[in-house]
Length: 112
Picture 1 (cartoon, one colour):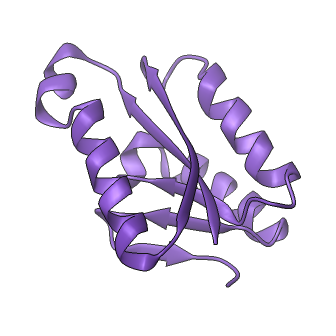
Picture 2 (cartoon, helix red, strand yellow; picture 1 turned 90 degrees about the horizontal axis):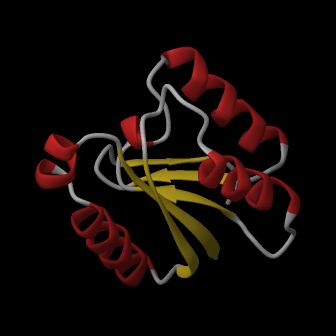
């Protein structure tokens, strides 16, 4: 299966606690273990409350690229802050028959 990855930090404090490198390593290790192909891993360093151009680009590519099976993140809170946002993103991925994988939340949701 082919995945696009997304990692994000929004504050200096977060960048130390759950760094981009830690997120990257978690995703890469998970993909290796599951034998998933990580096609690309995109990073963003800004708040989830502001526009997230990198996330929007990655999300649209996952939805529209037939060669991509889903989106992989290190943790759900890297993707959005509210339950409503997460539900909307998850719903759109399901409608497009795409997977959502969150490594640290032990979540693999969607179509196989």
